[in-house]
Image (cartoon, rainbow, N blue to C red):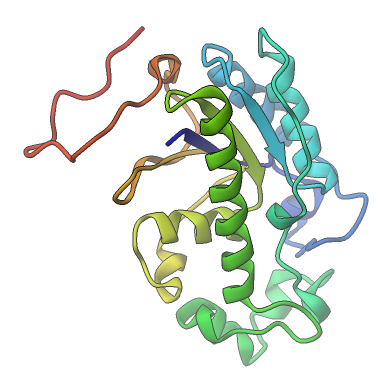
Length: 230
């Protein structure tokens, strides 16, 4: 299969003030967030990606544009509603410090598979639609460009954490063990027998080795020799 680079949007004005933005309109990258996203674009400049698929929310589109700006070609760049932020319902627009006093907060931390946000979405439904979207786009990119294709999905923290948890074979109740920082890069390849996770939550480092694509088969016993630089 192809290889997907999962990128969280850069820091926003809401992130900086401890506000749960959810799907609210008009939430943009702040100056630090723009710098973070630009750095991610620089890291990915050496990787000829075939597509940059983005959540439709403004902060993700801004991040995607900064990635596309550094690409030599013109990758396919659609919006994907199934990669949008979780619908936090009545929690949207409230501060994290206030939400931490809610009874539901402890379930979000320890048993997210049971959580349905009041007036919103369940965390299990968020994971199901996001993983399905990633697999759908991944299969389409491989069908068009071959198994060496590399593409980018720009989304949100909880969404990416749920995708990585699925790729790792982790129950959703364990997904809070995963961290996904602003503009961070995580890398997943969906093989014929199982997904392989090549990186999580990286915000620095050379990614040029991805320009060769990842041609994986069985997992190498002992860890193998790693990926070849271009």
